[in-house]
Length: 277
Ligand SMILES: Nc1ncnc2c1ncn2[C@@H]1O[C@H](COP(=O)(O)OP(=O)(O)O)[C@@H](O)[C@H]1O
Ligand SMILES: [Mg+2]
Image (tube, rainbow, N blue to C red):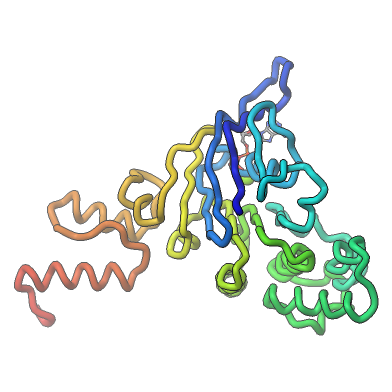
């Protein structure tokens, strides 16, 4: 079971003088249960790509299938959930409950089963079910984003796709969103995150796909990405690369300050430098 993206091409304003190729023969796959980071600079085609996953955009050539079903098919509506870049815009209900229950109630769920589904989704998204009777628009930006995520989770999707989920969040909301995503992933849901702020996700992504000008420039593990990429790596990885360039024999596939500290200490000790020197 997987998402398959094959030779996907997409143009904005096709056939006009403003025609712009946004995706150029993009191919990759996402296996069930994987945590995938789609990285790339602003304008590299990330949002355009994931709008193909649930049929918001239709390819000009190539295709996307989810577990063998072509994207755009209504049978995919509960299988794959998409959290847009500005998820506040996905909210519309007078209450949080109205918002989150919209999807499952359209699928025929009602009464206590519906309430239970909404509570479950709120808890999964890291929110307190007590907020279900208040207006989503009275919440902070970070909480609104989590409500929109709960709306996606209420459909019990097997894949969730999030566009720039940490942008604009304060540090506390960011930590809470990251831990929610890790939990969802360990519960067996495939998580696909699109971000140009890769530091947050590299440490636990199983696979990284880098887009450049609408094409896939790299596919591999996080560690492979750190070793191969010359730009767009976490600051701490840049430091290690710089040390290596200056002749220190340090590993460069490093994501965290702790790992960097251990590696630098190891190299210093191997050169005979002691703690208080
Ligand atoms: N609605 C649109 N009309 C025309 N061009 C667009 C539109 N949306 C995006 N583009 C262009 O397509 C390219 C890819 O955009 P996008 O997928 O939004 O990139 P990213 O999400 O990586 O920042 C960019 O050059 C962008 O300017
Ligand atoms: Mg985008």
